[in-house]
Image (cartoon, rainbow, N blue to C red):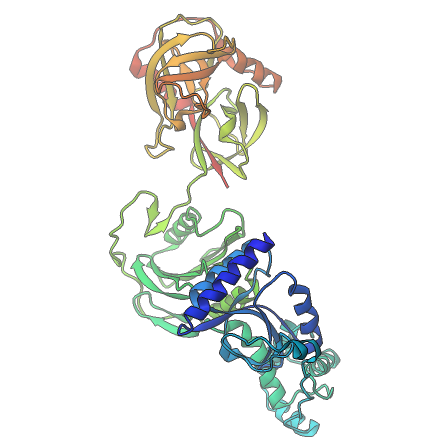
Length: 576
């Protein structure tokens, strides 16, 4: 894989020469506070990464960067190397304007679009020249006087920057005690200054530049959206306005930061509206399932993360107006995400007015979209049925394999209490107590061949809101290879019906529908198989569950059978 990645990057290097007129960018993978550490880290990366360069930065740090590339090539290389774990997840696109003297490859002293190869003897003998100590812009006494003019908030901000740089570990209180002085001296030592423990005006400016270097290219600007009635800082280098779909103003990714998105939330309402929005937001794909859920009397907070992105949503009710925002940022780029989120929170302000409920075009109308946003959908949607008064459910094993979360009906959480791989069965127990109005009666008697049967199932994954009845006949009381625990049915079922109950003409459950096999042998569409009720009863008994059973073979009116099936058939959703 390492060879493959190097080959891909080599091809991109050739491409960049042919398109030298395009804007050249770099992929910054690390920054170190001094030259020695930067040279040590660059030698660690050099054996596995092509196009590796080292530059001094304006803020006194030293950058490790890949490139140069065209912007399109850089995005591709960044995705590949992140995915393969070759570079840190917080690597990002950088621009030449942020880089100064080049110290790697050895022998190169100036930044160039395509660095020329040094002569062989020069390459073997040349050494990077370390920068000379910087002369302070103020004496220690002058620095103390300029420091005394700082406000308390400015002093706290200085401590925060020293903390970010890794030199300060105490409270952010604005008081410059021994801990703060030691951290200042440590920062001065790391950046080649005399260790006085008092930062000069120029040194404070350098620390600020280092602190803000991570925001390079994000173009944080205060945006006043009069339609939403919100003013706040937004990273306009990473997102741009796309559209209004009430109650959201949607800002989608420019491509500079993959996955980046911002929503401004604005709508009139009361507490009931706020709490409804809290519930609705959790159905959207942009709010991962796992994360913090906080709802107060007049506000809420939703956070979560998956392998693609991290999401933060906050909203509050004030004077009949609900306003807030959502920030979505790629997972692994935590430092930039935290800085952007902090800037957005600090700058958030309410303007007069609120978004009209009719705002937006709503041209794309789909049941899986809400205000133009994708509703979260389960990975697998199957069927099941209640087998006792406690809400125990039997379903197909393929409905619950490798799920991180299983829900029944309207989002009721469930857990697997038993499986049988040979039979393809799984039993689920709801986390919250359920009291089903109908439970299955398992048929112990042997049904008659060619008798009427019906399968109840969520054929279309719950889109219809109720199970569908599919009617057919009993073709055999054994499998094609003579399996006694199976029955063969003559009916055309849908994938969503899998796990659903198979009823005889009298409303007793004579089996559970199995998924269609996807091997080399393709059976006719109207051939289906079910695990028979006797095998299901034995499976449940082994789990300590006692299902209802009958041996009566009777007839029931189709409408009564449908009503019964609707009450005991369950939608089973498997979520990633």
